Each structure stands twice: as C-alpha cells, then as structure tokens.
Length: 150
Image (spheres, rainbow, N blue to C red):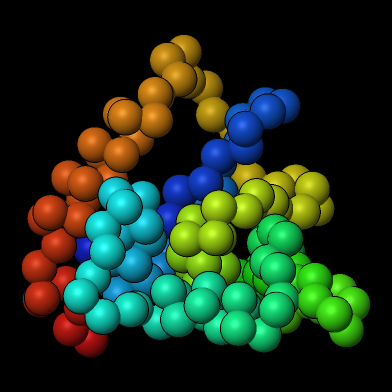
C-alpha cells in the first residue's frame, strides 16, 4: 500500500490492548473523522443515510463485528434487529465503523481475527481520547488530493 493510504487503527479496550490496522479509502476516513468530531455536513453522507434508513425500516443497529481477513481484505458485519428478527449484513470494516460511530453502537473484532493479525502493543503510555482525536485530526488535516490518485 502507498504510504499515504489512510489506516484505521483500532485497539482492544481490555485485555492486552492489541491493535488492528486496516487500510481504508479517503472518503471513508473523512466520514469517520466527521463522526468522531461531531461534524454535520449540509447534506447527509452515505453513512448518515444508512443510519436514517435503519430508523425508517424500524431496524436497530445493535453492533458491528470485524470478522476476518482473506487475502488482505477485511470483512465486517452489521448486526441488526427488527420486526423480522435479527439480521447480519456483510460490509467493509470502514463502512461498519463509520455507521457504528453515528449510531453509537459497540464495535467488536472476533478473537480469531485478533489472534491472527492483532499486534501486541508495548505502550507504557495509554493515549487519552483527546490525544487520539488530535492525532487523527492532524492526519485528516494533512490529506491532499494527490494522496488519492492511483
């Protein structure tokens, strides 16, 4: 991957706090940034639309789960509950995270995935939420259009 490709960094909230690094697209990185910062665009983004559609369809997003990696491609699931019962929808992890942040639902990764690709951290300092957001803001603020050219 090019060095200017956005990377979604997720860390376990408990246990040994392993990290999961997933390359994502620029638009998804921007959408995640908007959700983290509480930025409301003039018109809804695709991920905002999904959350609205869940409400109209009377479906509740319960959680998202990052499930596996196959040939460097990560897979995730949206776990929904509606009048027809529980449903699971396959999706990209970046989309799942962007939707989960907007819906305020828990995000998980399977233990098997974390065992396979999770990287142990040797941090002596645990970043505060504000430090993490500052680092992500800095990343987003320095994205250039040239970073997305193939």
